[in-house]
Image (cartoon, rainbow, N blue to C red):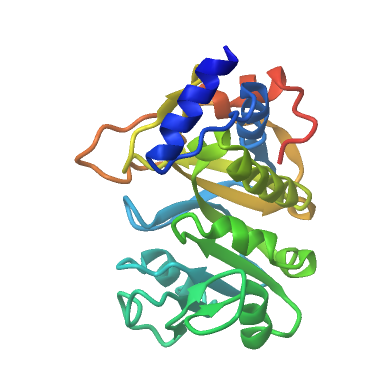
Length: 275
């Protein structure tokens, strides 16, 4: 067996790859289960577009003083809906020259969000402290194509705690079987779990789910988080998709939130360390 392992290892290295042990399936299962949504005393509403660019959020906007939205791309419908409530929106994305629509409550910065300041990159805490240094709860809508993990892990807890609601598109969950990626994913999810409840989760069907170790794992999933002091938990969410959910890409097959991220998975793994 040792000789076979050496042959496989050397074969991979000769072709520019390195083979290592994968994350135990039970660890990945627990990570996914921590993302199983709960229902709370605050109802969900849909804001933004009817497809991609629309999100379910808690109807808890009174007192939110600003929205931060890195990852603008070509859609600004969610930010427009937030601005329609009189809430200023700070947007950032170095890949575009501005938001998709003009709005007097939009403040655009041509920068990427990152774990360090410099060049085209700004840290989340630097951005927040520059634009909204005063008191008041904030809203974060973040879709930055996999860079969310180093950004979240590099943000001080006191800054994260200013966000009453976070709408987060999660990338890279299938990579959790890579031990290095698992550490980042698990650390970030545990950090969020210390502050927030998952109140909604919806797979983005732009890519299909990946089946690994008997688990269907979304390639992308939209998750809504509500700070724990804002609502009472009534129980685990059920009935997916949510009645207000919409398919992200109408031309592609849709799929519901996998069982690995529903209540049954949370119960099976104990649920004590879930968000």
